[in-house]
Length: 158
Length: 102
Image: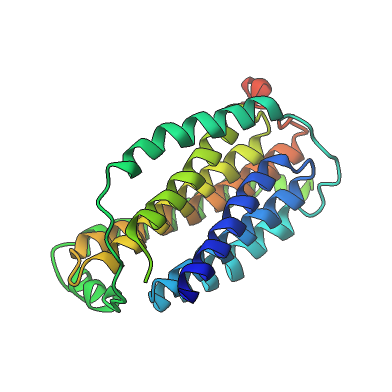
């Protein structure tokens, strides 16, 4: 029961941070809301007993990439008001209600506390999916190289 | 014990908020952050699936790593475009992105 309450509170924080992301006028605050959303999702993984995934989410996204993002957008002081709140509220209600129809037809199953991510990852790394993992690594590496090439000249102007 | 529908419902809620934000917002950075929220919803669904099955398909791990990799690349791209647009004084309003030329 306590687990259920913890999940409810975390899901509420996650949803509230997601809404606040689009409500904020300063982009730095919006990025901080995204960081809260990452942290809340990591706590949901802990509640699902997938501790390895939670650590990866925390270290890579909250600790690493979000720090880069916060540092990058922190000089932006100008507040922007480019969102239309009535459209956002109406869109969120309509889209969520439409997607919820799928949830209503789902069978209700209690989730088990399986620590099976490591064993499944071991099978993936040693099996036929290793090639796809190499492709993912190439994607990350090429995006980093592209970033350097694109902002090599611009970085002096900032 | 957590019901599977709770996981799917929270993922759907995040997806709905993110899609509504994508459709209503015109700020380039906010749109990119909204796409990042969609990846959060995806990750919650995949991790929920891991808890659902005793022995999940290894392809799900590849999918999870793929989602994480694309989310990381998106953040790198976001920072890159932010620096590029800021340096060239390009407006962050997506309606004016036709000015984004090499």
